[in-house]
Image 1: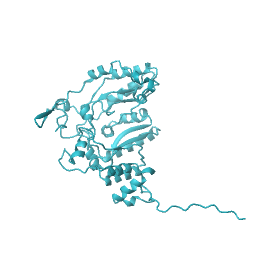
Image 2: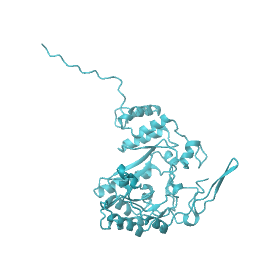
Image 3: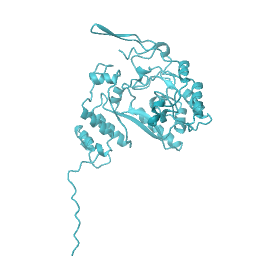
Image 4: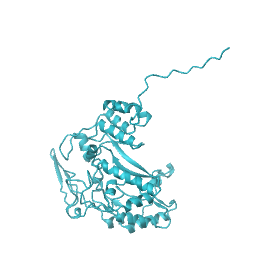
Length: 379
């Protein structure tokens, strides 16, 4: 109910009685428009950490964002585990080209700027306008997502404005490279029939690796996550590799993956591990699901019910099972071997323990090799 009414156009106040008191959640305010976002951006920010950190050596994390640009606000991605829809809304608004160009021209005057704009992004880098024109008058749909499990027929998947902006920024004197390091929504990218932005992205805007968030490969789990089906990610990776080869690039994908999301059983985690091995993906960082306030996934976690359908959903709450699911995502690591073997046995997938190419791990050795003894030289 709260999700359905969380819309600035058609949303209504939600009231719940609790004892002799009432909890009232008002509909959200309209998002900041372009003029208002531009006003905020032109305020005299120093791009420096507070002086209180100077005697502590500064803030190392600042280096990554000091010369980054936020060009948009809001996200219509609709991931069930993400609270961005509540923080910023599903209606995307963006800054003007003039505002962003002025900000980057200011970078050039900064003594620490080396010519590299680290990011032109936001909650989702390649969203620059509302997902469809209908929502401006009628609001966003209450009963469906814009992108999952498949893109809505009314989705306006168009990167022309974003592409024009990036090309303008590349032409600014003193700018060597303009990178995109915020997450790219690959299903929205694939929904755009004009491949011009994808080509420019690969040619000019990747600093070695591109961040994307497939999260899983099992479609039933992806449905509980509110993510697109794996076939779309497969098509994206194929095109990404092809474009890299075409332009003589050797750039990588960094996939964000999640274990133990509601709906994910141990056998699903095994299937994900098989997928990762088959595609030669070795994740260094993976996220285990944890409940955060206000999301659909958190509701599933605590109630064991999908609030959209009222049906029960499997929830891996046990700490050890969560540990097993997480270990499977890093099946290649020696320190995870025992957990992976235990998980495979519990899932009835001992066929993946062995020495053949399809196996995830080798069996644990039960016999110690005898120690070599030095031969005594003859007298």
